[in-house]
Structure formats: structure tokens, C-alpha cells
Amino acid sequence: MTLSNRQQEILKSAVLEYIQTAQPVSSQLLEERSSLAVSPATIRSELQMLVETGFLSQPHISSGRVPTDKGYRFFVDEIYESEELDLLSEIEDSFDFLQAMTRELAQASSHLVITHVPTRPFLFKEGWEGVLSEPEFQDKESLLNFTKFLRDVERRIDDLEVQGNIDIYIGDEYPYSKVGDFSILISKLPTREKGFLALIGPKRMPYKRNINLLQKMFS
Image (tube, rainbow, N blue to C red; front, side, top):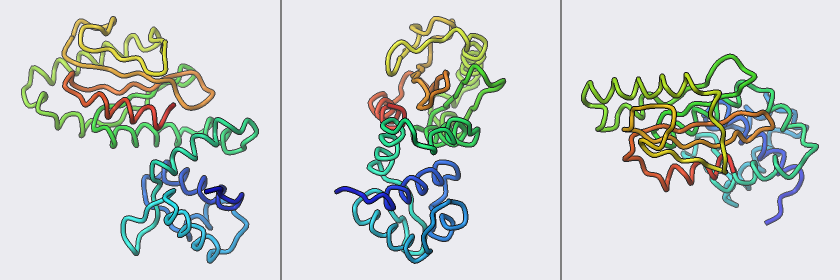
């Protein structure tokens, strides 16, 4: 199905709002926060159409909408295909976007996620609760080893280079730490800024799922 220009703008606004807030998006919220020059009734009607065509979902009848994989894919494809898209420059300059993407991936993967941009003086780090719920971290030694591994990652963060779409280091393959109990998946950021995102967890991680998550969100 081909979306009209208005439908595309409403979908992109809804996806961006959800990425930034992680909360279902209502028609009233879009009217208040976006630059859409349409009535609330029109926004409601178009949101319902986007639900029916699979770009958005509505968890509950009385709740707002959230993007589906199809909605995220449309959003990402539009970013890459349109060099003149104003939305892209807003995303690239937004700390909120980078933090929200870090949080979204951490929640989806239940692993620790670090986002690093060399031009910014700090790291975005999300997902402690999810990764520490893994059975590997029930004993103190494993927890201490994980802390050491993260310290090693952060100390050599500027030495990391992403060679492919996704680089995967399993256990001892990671060159900058002697702690070999964990794996790290690294992907470039989906913006024009240089940097990368790292997904970290036990070696017993669901690799296929995590790779698919990175491909969907950052390919």
C-alpha cells in the first residue's frame, strides 16, 4: 500500500514521538507536539488507518498507538532515502533521540546497551536491570567480572572500530579485555554522526534475536 504524503508525515511523527518517550502516542499528543497542519479528527482517522494497515498497533482500545516493525522499517527507510528530510537533521542533533534509541534496544534485548559518539563527552548506557536478571549474575564473582569487562570496554572505547554492519566478539575474541565471559555486538549509529552502539551480555545470549534487533533498528 502507498501512503499519502499526509499519512507519511503522521506516521513519522508518531514513530519519532514513541522513540523519544517510549509511551503510546495519542492523536492529541501529536497535535500538541508536532507541526502537522491538520485537525485532531483527521489525525485520529489517519492513525486508525495506519493501525489497520499494520504500521502502528494499539495495545488497548483506550490507549495510544505504538510503531510495529513495519512502521519502524518505513521510518528508517525514509531517513536513508531522503537526503533533504528535515526530520533527519533534527534526529542527528538530538540527545533525546540517541538516548531513546539506546533505551529501546536495551528494553527489547534485555541486555546492556552503550551508545558512544566521539564528539560527545559521555556515554549513553541503558539496560542494567535486564542484563543483571540473567542467571549468570546470581553469584558475586560473575557480577564483579562483568563490572571489570565494562570498565575495560569504556577505557578503550575510542579504539573500537566497526568493520562490518555488525561486529560480534564472543568471549576471548574481544581484544581489549582479559575477561572472557561475555559477548559484545557493535553496530554503527543510524545517523551521520560517527560513533557506534554496543550491545553487551553473557555469552549465552540469543544471538539471532539480538542481531535481528540491530539490523531492524540500525541497518
